[in-house]
Length: 112
Ligand code: HEC
Image (cartoon, rainbow, N blue to C red; front, side):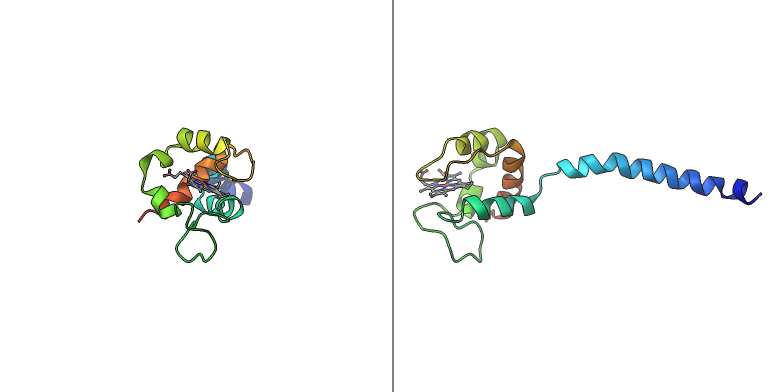
């Protein structure tokens, strides 16, 4: 009798689990500005000032707020193609599209 009484609760719990399981991959694909910041911190800070409070970087390379003000750099393929060929003495690395998506999310936060 008790089990029959609890069944609707279990069904509701199961439905919730299914909804959460379906939501998870979508959340994992969302642009992640925090990952973008980590990526920029690793690969860009030796030349670019990537965010406001930064003391490293140089004035040879445009700061990220200036880059973020240009719409062409917020377009995934444009930035991906640009970064796939090292510019200046930028260290040679191959960003994934995922890296670039996260980087753009971070760039958007630097918009003036
Ligand atoms: C070794 C130094 C160096 C590193 C590291 C570097 N850059 Fe640059 N970057 C420059 C310089 C210098 C310029 C400006 C002159 C030029 O375009 O060559 C520039 C220009 C750019 C531009 C074009 C700006 C414009 O409006 O024309 C973008 C976009 C850019 N960098 C993004 C990045 C990103 C993102 C990273 C990190 C993944 C990075 N750079 C790492 C030196 C560097």
